[in-house]
Image (cartoon, rainbow, N blue to C red; front, side):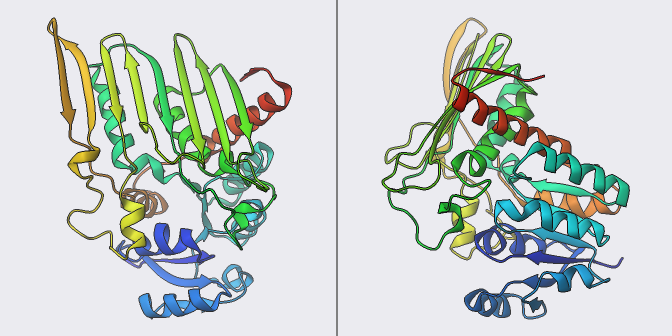
Length: 351
């Protein structure tokens, strides 16, 4: 079976850590071309993937008839234009999160993909991290009873303005709500579906920041409150997940290890890839058969590779897409509602 010829547009952190190492290991995908003009990136690509061609102009990828699949790994405000060009050139498309800046752009790309009879999906990789997989399993198992409160945080400590980073510039789609909020919102929608309403507070906390670097969001469901939070001035982080139900609670600390391991050069084919250390395992406390039981819960093994293996099978028609573009579009809907809520100082209903 011939491999799917794959190209990356952009080779910053996303390409280096989250995409190229996984594409390189999927038997049915071939990392054929990468578009970048960064000399340091080109040197790294040549050392890691010597068979991969490097071009400076993304248009060469669109014009290359052998390329079947294109990853858009560029600044958020460019996602729509580049994805549209790729679809019009007859390519399948993966867009790094967030999908687009607006719901309107997302809807247009979804319709264009249908018209072109091509797949488009979004890299919502935080569905395949150890902590969320564990949370999903515990909720599905029913030990907590009816869930009444769910809190998820993605906090960091970056007290300075990072130089020469497009994510620090006041551009459409910049800021922590679009960046890390995309993960938290997608996870919540996977668990609970679309909410009835959104309430959100956005702040600019760091000295001289040009972007929102803090948000706190509430998703409103019947009988359930979902709290989502992200900040860049959190030196001592709290739990990543706190879930409370009628029968008990589950609390989990510690970020998924895959990003850090990949940044250190570890490859996804390592046998212990995605396994969390025991000191990051969560704590479950619940009523079982009339007894109060508290126990440490071993984390599920995370693996971003599952996104890529599903993608290859979906292109061949063997599986449905794990991340449907409509789901990624709904994330943008929630972000837009959150921005509206902040500016209008009120909760926004979701139709």
